[in-house]
Length: 384
Image (cartoon, rainbow, N blue to C red):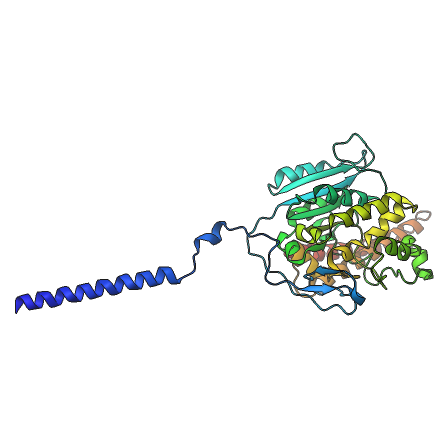
């Protein structure tokens, strides 16, 4: 009896052990491996969620993922987005166009600070510079095209094309108009997802409905936009097989980021031909450069108009995100403060030749300006 009981107990433990081994094998072979995710860095050029959209009336095509509320040219469907893994570090190169007299030391400083960033500073008016251009013509467009041609096969994941000045009016207000801060805050995933990003979030000047290449004699365009009279003809020379757009728009002023995939969607031979056009054109330097200012968005997105909603550009592109109505309120307060400051200056100027200076009124207005500035600072600090 005792021997029989021992045998039964041994069988029980054998069955239990076999069952446990089976469960362990099933658990570890049936689950997905987690170890590859930690150090896995996917190619930013691969995606299972792309959409190819054609330019209006059957023009060139481009793989496009459009930012929130971007103005889409007529007849273009809204493209889907490309999803990228989080916490991915993408390589970047900052390409700068500068004159010899201009200080671009901020570029080298930030390149030393950010391990994923390289710099390429082109001095356009010095033939002996380490990086220069075939001819100082076409403003920054000559530099941008030259960099792409010379580095087509060895691009970083993202290339940023910018001017040499660190602080300028056409940079972003909420980033202190600081080029270095714009580079630091730039969301690489946003650029990879969309392929192209105009680095200026503020739509004016340039958006919407900016320049009309098919209406060369539009008096408003001719008066305010020097390149308007020739952009239609220039388009036909640059892109002879493409329909001339009814309108071209994007925020000024030729500063943008592009993924390597999007750059290579266009052949090297095409970039060479674009630069040859710049070298050969009889147009004035500033005019040929400004023509390209409103062509880049079409080249890299297939869109005639590229006008992302400003607050979305800040949030998605730089991580500067506003609570509801705060963005509009900020500029309402700013405009009101500017108007008051202008009125204060006018009162002081008119009172210069008299002893009747309305001190109490000026003091009240200055207090109001301070209050408005404080509200603006509060909105900015919350967003950043």
